[in-house]
Image 1 (cartoon, rainbow, N blue to C red):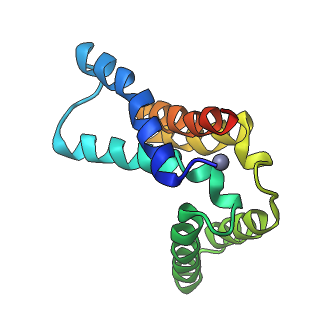
Image 2 (cartoon, rainbow, N blue to C red):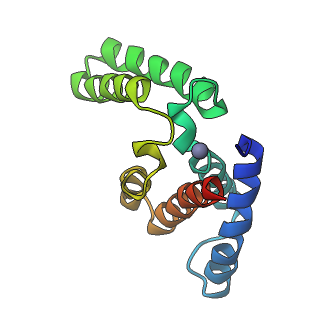
Length: 138
Ligand SMILES: [Zn+2]
């Protein structure tokens, strides 16, 4: 099973041609902020499928973050986001490894919300997530 670092390096290599294309065609601003955001997206989405694995790096990061967000939303009285986080936490706990999270629909499901922010970010998210699925098949 490839490590988190392997997934992240592979995703960076897969995303690089897209970066060059976007730079060439001036699709994406290449300031420091954008570059850092793209790198964060690639590094995060390339290991997201392993959230269904209890010992994974992303799970160790995700759980405290999700619990913190849940607590914050509850304190703020935001019931709907709190409910969504609860459902995600429950789902992640019961999903079997290499099940739904290791599928194309999951890649789309997690990438599509970034379309509301910037379509190139959604593409990087999808490519990174999909690169994880590819390397897991090798
Ligand atoms: Zn995996």
